[in-house]
Length: 108
Length: 371
View 1 (cartoon, chains in turn orange, cyan):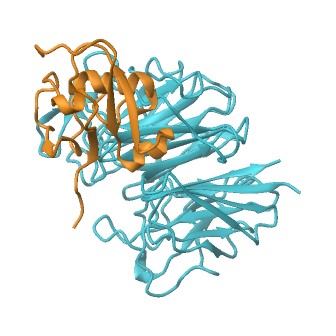
View 2 (tube, one colour; view 1 turned 180 degrees about the horizontal axis):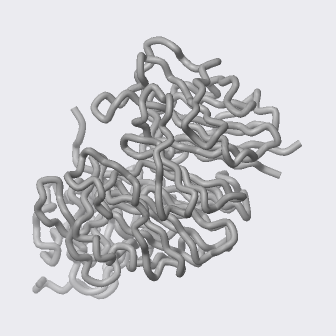
View 3 (tube, chains in turn green, red; view 1 turned 180 degrees about the vertical axis):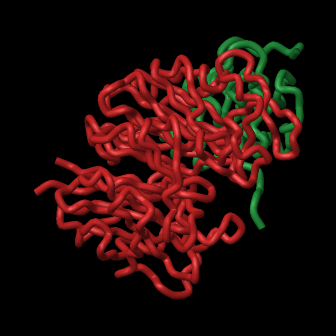
């Protein structure tokens, strides 16, 4: 679990892939308010809470595991394989960088 | 004059084709949900403005959409298809056991009895029901928990529940079909289920009298004769006159009895249609000719319908949910192909025209006869 608690009500920027933005009618970037530690899990919890239509599209509804063809990037790093309870980079917590959710490259 | 609305699901979005009762001039609206695989789109028989669409993709999983204005706008509704309890295991291709795992919704069936009731047939095979217009789903788990469940195995396309038929007057009776488990019937609203596969003969399984394991591709019935069922099996066209308790083959003079679709004429309960496909290996029409076959005798005696359909160099497939009939006075038929064409007939199949021909591969076709 995270050891670095962020101030309550941290505003985190999230960039979603185009199909999900279109599905829920969002702009390229959405802001969510995260209580407590800023982690993949807490950000996605906040995102799904604000936009329930995204439930099941980024991570499995039951297991909460990242869908196989979804990736999480931030600060030019691939965070996809990080523990979902790991703190996100400080630049994301401070709002200087977004957490980027994107579909993995596929096709020939 | 009444109208006609054809709902087309494709590999890359959904399309809505509209016409009047003449069905000679068509407008094409779409793609809806561009880029997404749309396995099925179907409208409520009780309110034609109520539509449901099943979207599935490897990236973003299952999404269910609902429209209350005939497809002008859509809302995302519930996509929680969690199996009831511990899912258990079924046969895998190699004979090993594999846990039930939800993949996608193949078929959405809005009820003919209640506007807000809709059924979903899913892979791995299970039946879900919503009574609030797809805002929440509950599994009718008596089907998956049937004693034969551990023996069910996937067909080449996955272990999908793809056909859901309601009895026209008895809401407690449903028929479903699963590839490759077979057909099942409930008489108590989905609490308990009976395999209805007696008489099916499937060379692909060692025991041809097996209660399950048959690769049923599609079922249909006419509401005026709900005990008469028609089946396109992997191979063989079959008919039952006792609500599925027994089946007999009616393939007759078809050039191939392999195929995916089967439909009953809207006004003639003994008139049925199939699209023969060469084989389970080739998945193309025999001789490169796309032919719909019609029987006016409930099977056995078939005639080829070719006027307006390609009769040379045609190597498309017609998937199991890609044929539909409307209920205009002159019955219309619609066939979608993996080549992106939707062929329509406004005269019970005597003549055909491509009402759109360059869509992505067509996965499903449904039609609404509008007031």
